[in-house]
Amino acid sequence: MTSKERMLAALSRKQPDHLPATTHHLMPYFLQKYMDGINNREFFDTFGLDPIEWPNFVAYTPDQLANWRIEKTEHPDKNGTLTRFRVITPKKTLTMSVTSNHYTAWVTEHLIKEKSDIEILAAYMPAPHCEVEKQNAFYDAHPDALIRGTIVCADIYGQPGCWQDAACLFGIEPLILETYDDPEWVHAFLQILMQRKLTYVRSLEGSKFDLHELGGGDASSTVISPTIFDDFVAPYDAQIVQAAHDCGQKIVYHTCGGMMPILENIVSMGVDAIETLTPVGMGGDAVLWEAKRRVGDKVCLIGGFDQFHFFSGCTAEDTRREVLRCFEEAGEGGGFILSPSDHFFDADPHLIQAFADAARECVYR
Image 1: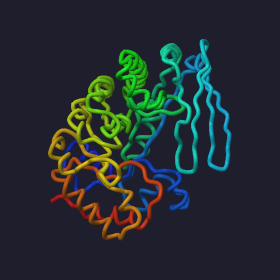
Image 2: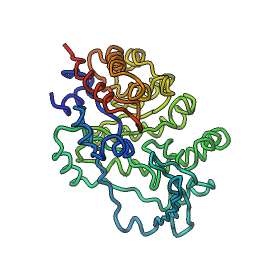
Image 3: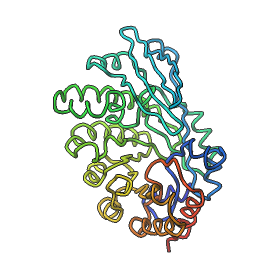
Image 4: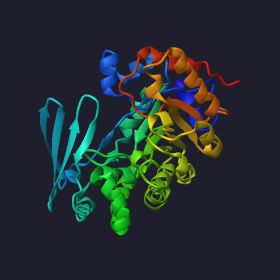
C-alpha cells in the first residue's frame, strides 16, 4: 500500500498492510532546531512516516472585506513578539493581541470584551470560501499524502470547533461561567460562529480533501463537563459534521485533553475519526484499549502516542515498546492511525526513527 492508501483504509475502519504512523502538524521550532530547517514533506521522507499535507486555499471576495478591515502592529522584545490587531468595522473597532515566541503563539487580549460585541461579528465578520480549483490542483499534485483541511477558524486566532473558536475570542473561563449566568448569550454567540463555518463548509462542494479537522482542546473533558459538551458543543459542531458529509467530506474531531467521559458524545455527532487520544502521561485520560472497545467499531482512532516521554529522555527500545503497546491496544482489525497526541517541540530524531521503524513492523496478517 502507499501511505495514502494505508491511511485511507484506516479512516474507513479497514485493515491496511501495516500500522499507519504519522504526526499531528509539525512545529517550525522543531524543524529548525533539530532538522536543519527542512520542510514538512522532507521530514516525513527522512523517517519513512506516512505524510500529511495541510493546504490552506481559503479566500475572501474583495467586497467581503470592505466592512471588516484588520490592521496589525508588532512590538518585539527579548521574550518574543506582541502583535496588536484592530478590526475596523462601520460600527465599532475591536481589538485583540497575540503574543508569540520561538515555540508558539497565544492570545493575550481577547477580541470579544462586551456581550454586545457579538453583534459586530454577526453584522460584519465575513465567511471565507475554499478556492476549489487551487485545492484540487494541490490534491492531484500530492497523490501519496493524506490531504487534511481545517474547518475555518476565526480571523487572527481561532480553532475549528464552534465552542473552541468562542473560547479563543472570549476566553475559556468567562465562557464557561456564562453557560450558567447567561446561556442564551452563549447560544447566540455559538450560532454566529456556526453560521460562518457552515458557509465555508458549503463552499467545499467539489473540493478534494481526505479529512477535515473540527473541535479543539477546550471541548475536552479536562476543561468542560459532559453536560456543557452536550448543551453547548455538540448541537453546533454536529451541524457542521452533517454539512461536511453533505459535501462528501470526512471529519476528525480533535480533543487534545480528556476524552473518556465524552467518547460516545463525540461519536454521536457523526464524525468519521477522533483524535488525539492523549494518554495520562501527557495530561489527558485516554485508555486506548477501552476507547477501541467502546467506539472503535464506529470511528477511526488517531493518536495515542506519548511524545513527551518517548520522543526524548528514553531509549529507542522504550519508544519501540510504546509503539507496540499502542498497536496491541488499538490496532486490532485496523481503524487506527498511530500519531503523537498533538504537537511536539523538542524531540530526539533517533527516537522518531525508532517510532517510524516500529510502526512498520506492526504488520496486519
